[in-house]
Image (tube, rainbow, N blue to C red):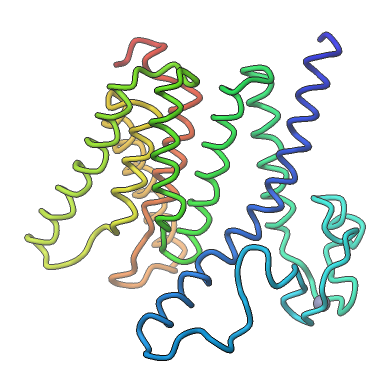
Length: 274
Ligand SMILES: [Zn+2]
């Protein structure tokens, strides 16, 4: 491999590691920011007097002893290894999920640079995969798919299509977004009428709209089929392990995100499926 591309791939992977580190912060804080907003909206008392809580404040700290982290505790993956997975101050174990997420995003960015070179196309897809990972983790943790991520993801797909970055005709992207939203909305309405239950969350419609915008309306049947199969497999695993309670909600977001990521890499159009 010539020096230049190899160098770019490593550089992209390093940038990805840093984004992975930020993604950990986002996945933890965004649902809590929304919860605070809802609480503030539901009570007459505003959030005045409460400590500021957003993506940049307070500074990253150990959730156990609250000690702020030093810059050398914030280096993706390496800090975790140097600290042997424990807080430098109070020795509480740190979840291995943090370095794994950082590695995953680093790997995704490296793969995008390898596949598309250092280009806007690579940047667009790297952003797409990173946002999907954030949504999958937040939905798995909290059953939420925040509008703050699903809606910009959809707009970004439409814009990337219009600018010719992702090789998708704009019309396919627009109809992908429309059909993606409507198809799950219809399923939701039918389910609600038949059973009186909310089988899906509004976030699921918006996530499928975003995926439709990035991948085109043609892949929607494959997306829904793939996500449903994955959702059923997940439910079966939960049941077998005795962790499924009656009426427990199994989030669809992670399955949709994974199916979307797989279809983005393995484009069915390229093998004549659609
Ligand atoms: Zn600590």
